[in-house]
Length: 594
Image (cartoon, rainbow, N blue to C red):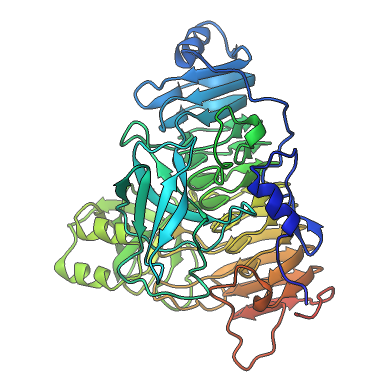
């Protein structure tokens, strides 16, 4: 029986630090384009020269609307924690074709603030020192409760921060899914450190597959305490970022919040290959970014992400969402809601609902927003019982959240623990098209918005869903989806259901049909991925047709699946739907699960 194994030839090639021009593992004989796939170069790039990028751009903007940065490789030191800030600009182009900047600190690279019709093109970004470090595991507890690792030559160790991933040095891919670790990484001296798993840890053979000799990667800060997203945009309209290459970032690659109709075109996120790395390292880089590649929060019109690639980053490839506010009381047309950071609902906005349990109500309209009293003891007791990220719970209980009284245009009975959001600020109208994503520990494309398309993408070897449409109560990230098309995507080697459209209430249980509406899943090709290939719940008017599916049984996967689908007495199926009304499900073109 075929196994999902990397060939021995690849193992030899990768373990010799990828000295050949191309290193691409084969799965069942197929080229999956793993690893360092950029065009090889004969020698490392020229040494970087010091350059005041901010000063250069600011000077040109006094007289020009099109700034051309001379090609070259520059070392840039940030000012006030930012390497380049573009603020209050309109109808401006910054052209950086053939320009690489080497960031001196692990802080923000480019920040856009209150910009309109601004274009940034052609920039390549790397860091010295890197925002992550790598070490080889040299010892571990008998039950793998702790591991000890030595920092490898060429990697920094100024300030380590826990965000651990473990890679197989032979394949350059993840050895295991993410584990829970204690925040403190203990220094043992002589470049050696110990990382310990969480107090609740219990050994599991199918999950704890790391071994001595594996490569451990975790975050790194320089100077100490310095961090930030690579590119961030706030309150920008029609921002365009084109042909940007990003080799590392302390947190996200591209973050936007409260923007409108951004475009990311042919942007590339990948780990830098040894032949093009100016620093000689004992082993090649295993990671690109530390967290998400493309992250959009609160957009009026969602981003267009076209022809981009993102691989080997520490979290999702794409996440498009808005913000939920927690409902603690409902009386007629008035809701008492907790706002974690900033209220996103304004009078006149459509208001969407995620019920704690039960049917999703039709949308309403916000009429009035008023301040309300702080959290009560009874509300604190309720919050302690909710399934929320610990940081959100802390904000609610610690008095950091504000409370408002929201008046709607009609009565909407909602159980305590439901959530609401503005339907205008969740990223509706998004487009993710012709992108190449994968080789990450989490989701490929995560959508919490409506009136959008996910079309023509390739997603390879993700450890969670390749395409996931779902509101997330845990993160208070909105919203449910309507009128979304998932079409003509190619998904390879996914370890969870490759396409998932799901909705759960605050109680963690699936919501009835109608949480999502008008979803089309058509023309997708899914291979070498665990069954079911497609899983949809809580959707009204669902159409699944023309997909080519070749599911694989959990036992086929190496490393083994830690959380295989539980079928019970049911026959395994390529497509599973639950609580969906008005569904058209076509299974033509589906191979029987192996």
